[in-house]
Amino acid sequence: MTELEKADVGEFIFRPSTRSEDAITLTWKAWKKHFVHIDIQEIDKLPGQAIGQRLMISNEQYDNLREIVERYIIPCNRLIREVTTSAKWSDCDKWEDLEQQLKDEKASDKGRIPYRFAILPQY
Image 1 (cartoon, rainbow, N blue to C red):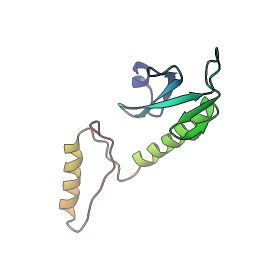
Image 2: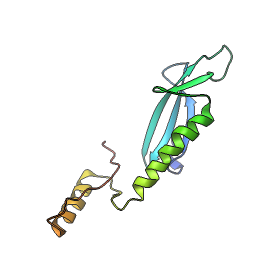
Image 3: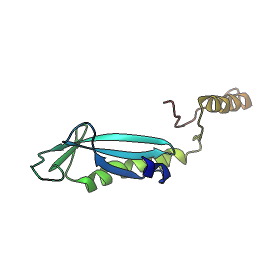
């Protein structure tokens, strides 16, 4: 976590899971101080083998860690970039700040229904 706190948004690490010997945890820096921990189940792990022959995230199967990066992390990073570059994006740390932005937008145009995207720590 210490390494990722200093890293850019979108960076990630694979590490041993604290829950099981047949699992890996993928920790991904989704946004500034927001980290996502993803459990990866190792299937068909042979004795002495460093990693299972198949890897599972939920119901999705992957053959190796590179495939997880290509099919899971890269698309997630792309979605975060799309959202955070949207005109409707608000980089707020508090619900109250977001709420005030929406109230200000509504006050400036009563016929409009304002909306915003944000990543808030409490959610």
